[in-house]
Image 1: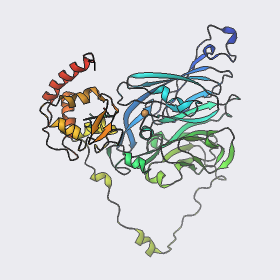
Image 2: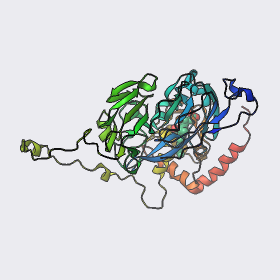
Image 3: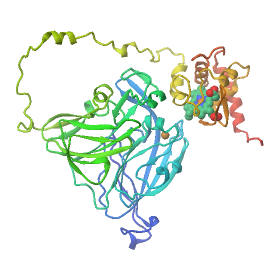
Image 4: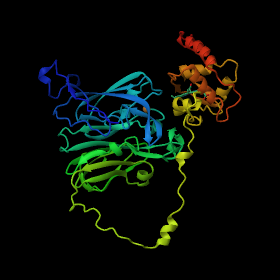
Length: 493
Ligand code: HEC
Ligand SMILES: [Cu+2]
């Protein structure tokens, strides 16, 4: 996704004119709103030479997008894209970080910025429920390119779903030497039950994440982010700078551009440059700044040189260089003739093709007008209770074979279950003998028929049996009852 540049606004320094532009107390600093950009764009260099109070406004959005061709995934994002908005501030600035959690979201979130000197990088100060907004302020003491990410439990799951981005703290001594174009590229590994390329909506797999066994490794949140019309467009002779990040959560990236040499690299996003590098390591939760000049025209591929990730898991983005082909730099093909070699070997290697996995996929909701409880579960519940309702020990209770669920689903009065979906659930609960004490946020926006469908689904799958299906009528009556209860003042204990 691309967004137009947001203008950087400097508000006039109204109250302490003599202090404007000078090092001053934090509350006397001129106030600016940070220009934030979506990948692959980077905000322009900061030209001022004095500290400011920079307001950064980030909105967490949980949304569906394409992780590969025909493959949908529910991403959790800072600003609607993976990676999140690129933030640029100047060393010495006081940064006022505002984190809003969109009211349509289902989970609480927060932010840990590696550019912060202070406990948790801001995580505890920004823990924010859906429909709320938090703020904390920090001083950008160190220059460099830093990762930010969500640090809400389970942390690995929030990061694996795309909750990371970059903040660049420009050195006090001035911006990096000017280049023709700057880009924002960030790698991440993703975990689904099904292997790479299986079409339809794919659920997050906690087990694959724990096993560090990703099905997708991609730049900018999708195997499609920088191909076709979205390839990065450059020209021969241009000097390019890429702010590279790696959100992980697990893999280290061997970042490489096929057919290019980085003449300058700032390893790990630090201050000291090194030169003439083919591949640079970008740690999980780390970064690098790479620079190169395009010497001849053509298409260049950015890859993770752990190369099966590039060609089999999506870690590939294209850079298209328009302009002349410079023959003394690169000749093009000079020889093309037949070489017979050992044909027996060649034909032995030509085995049967692998069956197309995509054609065997049958999970797409059919055109039938009946409501698909399984799809509703995947969209509204699986991110916590997991794809097969198995839950996550100590964090999310299981729905599969849940004694708690099935005792209530087979009772004559089942409004408590409708209440759990509508109002959420907090406080200690024991499921199959194991204690849980978490927060289930209310599931917003489902109709009576949809709640009936999802409850019918969860009470008739994964070994759950014996409960009659829920009807919209039953849910409608229960809704009236549980909503009235929730609105009444809490009774004294
Ligand atoms: C934000 C994460 C989250 C989402 C989304 C979520 N739940 Fe829950 N759910 C929880 C947590 C955490 C608990 C335990 C709450 C507690 O400790 O009191 C829970 C408890 C339950 C329980 C009772 C305990 C059990 O395991 O039987 C049921 C039933 C349930 N959820 C159903 C659903 C259904 C149906 C959906 C989707 C419509 C859903 N939940 C969506 C987090 C979630
Ligand atoms: Cu989060």
